Image 1 (cartoon, rainbow, N blue to C red):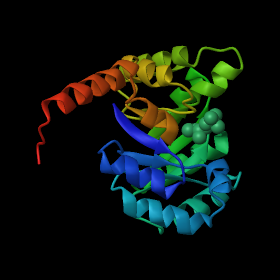
Image 2: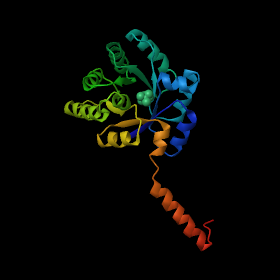
Image 3: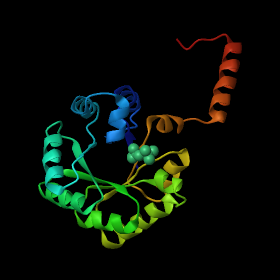
Image 4: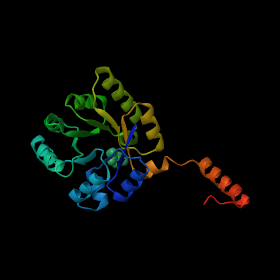
Length: 217
Ligand code: G3P
């Protein structure tokens, strides 16, 4: 499974990229607002940090407007994936942009039929929002399992991005369900490495090593 990092914070992207943990980046208007930075400037910087897809979201609500905005976003970097909402207008924009060979991430997916339509519209990526479904008492993992099955049934090559990831278990179950990608907030991505027995083991090894009085360098 590939990891995208769901953030507009350059320092986090850089740190995770150093560990080889990042295959791409996703942003949305809320993450841009949180960064407090100029949209184009921050997206351009992100594009320099990774060769993988960088999702940048349109804000127009009609297809012609989304296409115009999408084309403008595509000028920011060669690895831009235009992010459009899962509406009929979004699907029209998706079809037009992917038809011209551009990457499109269809976002705000909350059921399997929406995901089926996005694949039909030629989406490069579909983003089901696990955490927001869980917030509403619906099991987000069931949705990604359904999407995986539908896409496999018909050989759609739209990649499934587990999005709105809130917990380390979301990441594990997304991998078990066969999601192609999980887009994960930096804090959760960093916490995946942690285990108390790893920390305890390091402590023990360091204590024993000290007793030897030796140094490696
Ligand atoms: O990947 C989509 C994500 O940014 C939304 O997450 O936590 O706002 O539902 P959240």
